[in-house]
Structure formats: structure tokens, C-alpha cells
Length: 302
Image 1 (cartoon, rainbow, N blue to C red):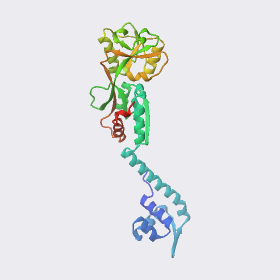
Image 2: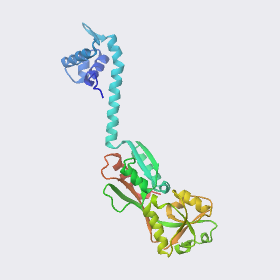
Image 3: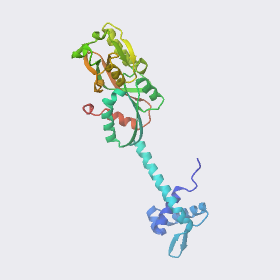
Image 4: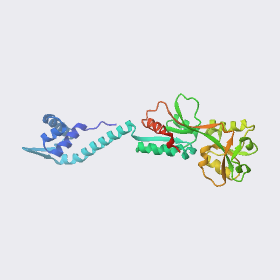
């Protein structure tokens, strides 16, 4: 990048003198004596190669070259001032861009309250919100393509990433409304033993998949997976067609689909964790702000 040809202090001195057309008043505005001001203007005129002010006894005026330079000088100074303000806003964490990954099911629970709180606190921040499952979120955090992840069942320990549990929730049975078990208020997990299952692929969230599989194994059977689907809404839609049943986090109840019933399960001893994830060494000043928003009064969360 080329160095600027005209020093900014000289441009500032030029603009002030052009507005005052009086060396004494201009020097007073700049907080300097008249001789240094005259020197600044002389150096600027040497740079330009032409006089910028006409000097007559008792008054000065802008030359044609000075009139031509004035709008550009004002624009440069204004642009710099705006840039400095923006840099300070970003540096302080009051502005900038924050990239958030979130598991689709959290769009119904954690995400709305988080965005509401964060938008109230940081209205100048642009948020890029991307829907993705847990495994892609962890990869995106390490690759620095997102800044914050909202996911289920984070790893137990990770040297690069930090995690904080936001909430835990039980599992529910997802059934076609016409299924005989849908007539019960509570379903025992072993009652699902002969049913085909619709589940998320293990690759998109191994810990969550294993929790569901272990629920079944503890009840004496291994789930027979008839169909995989990447998103919970698709899982529920496929269940509604009669393709199978599923076990899902309780928040999935908020997906309202015709032909789908949600029932409590027994034993009700397993909880899935919802967590926020971030890079431990992240220098983005917005990250502490969103972590603070997530630690807002839990009663604000749906």
C-alpha cells in the first residue's frame, strides 16, 4: 500500500484555515501558534506544487487549487474520523460481526432469547447465524469460520475449545399419533423394542446418538434404525408418516407437526446437555459479550 502523499495534520490545518480565512483564528482552533500553522500550510503547498491561498494585506482567500482540494480534504478527514470511531466500537466489543452456529432444535429454545438479549445490549453488532449440527460446529470453531457454537453434548475435554452448559433436558418418545402407545401419557422405553426408529446419523452428533442408543440398550434392546435424517424436524415429519418412532430431546415438542405425538418416557434418568462453545484463545471482543448474554437470568430463556 502506498503511503499517503499528503500528511493528515497538514490537511487538517488546511481545512481549518480554509474555513476561517484568518491565520489567528485558525491557529486558535488548532491550539497552535501562527508560525507553525504557516509552516504546515507552506509544506502542504510544496507538496501540491501550487499555492492554496492567496495572501493580500489584511485578508487571505482560497486559490482555484485550494478550492479544488478542499472537498477532498474534508472527505479524507471525515472518512478517517468515522474509521477511528468504528475501530474503537469494534475494539470495545460494541460493534463488529459475530458468527454463530446453532443446532436446529435450539432455534426453538435457547437461540431466540439469546438473540433478543444480545440485540438489546449490542444493537450495532451484525450477527451471521448458521444452522449446523454438533460435529460441523466443532470443526467450524477450530477452522475459525464461526465464533460461537450452540450445540448438544459437547466433548468432555478440549484444549482448544471452551464449553459451558446452558441447560439440560430429558428425552421424550416421538410417535405417530395413530400408534397405540400414543394413547398413553408415559411410555416405557422397552415398549419401543419392536418399533423401527428414525434417528439422526451418529456422525452429526456422536454423544447424543449414543445417549439415545444407550437408553434403548439399558431397556434390553438395540434400536433398529429404519431411516436417518439430519434435522429433528425431518425426523418428526418421517415419524408422522408412520415410518418409525424416535427418542428426542424434550424441546423437540415445540415442533408442531400434524400426526406426531410426544410422550414422556420411563425411566426418565438421562439428560442431554445444551452448551455454548468458543475458542479459548479467541481475540474477538464480541465473544465475551455473548457469553455474558448467555449467563443472563435463566428465567429469560424459554
